[in-house]
Length: 166
Image (cartoon, rainbow, N blue to C red; front, side, top):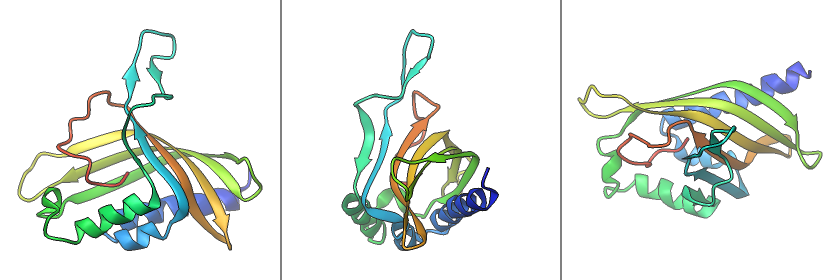
């Protein structure tokens, strides 16, 4: 195992979480490649030995860098009612597994995530948790997210909206 590489990737994912929790969305966008595919398929439970389907064509969202940039710009306007008042969020990343990618400058990274948020004076906490499958690409010595597939463990999401980034 390459411990230096594991440290780099873990630090990258923790830095990403910090940027999102601090609402530094423009800096977060810089962590994405221009051709990024950012998607969260709908989780389908089925009667089988696997118990769920990761190859679902339906998705809560399937975004590009352009659409993610538009979402970030909208968050900075007064019309993002889901973020007014701003949400307090925490992103937790663990169980990071790194494998070789399809090209020499890419890695496949599997991780578990737990996302929690609260709003205003409401004491209720909303959460999503599950698995993320990323392709990270090294561009000029910096790691960038080339693709992310987010698989929540919940088949029915109990959060009010999907205005945040996972």
